Length: 176
View (cartoon, one colour):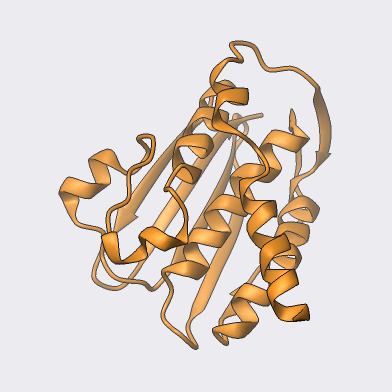
């Protein structure tokens, strides 16, 4: 069906980048200046089938921000993080994306109101093939966050995650 096909395309979009491709990169190439706000809105649209199916509202209310980065790689970061936020968000809930800047840093936060991630899992969440909930194992190999971490590292940035009973927040810090 059309729905299956678009789901398959969305899944492909989330897994386009093979981890080995970024693992073997030690230097960041193809750095350009682009509008990261626009890029994130595009990623949200790419995942539209996934959030509409769960009746999730995605709040992308932010100013326009320019960034210097590898556009293709950064797209993978947003797609993976937004896809995860949707996957673990309750039905009819909200996923919030915010962007802010300081003189040195662009900060992107992707937050949902899913279940708390246990502290022992937080430590391992970015390691390769780590899956904290085995019941979700059919949802992919869990390689997504390892790719995200690697790409953020390549950009000399950092990623952190805060999780409480109320919400889970992935925060990416990228140098300007």
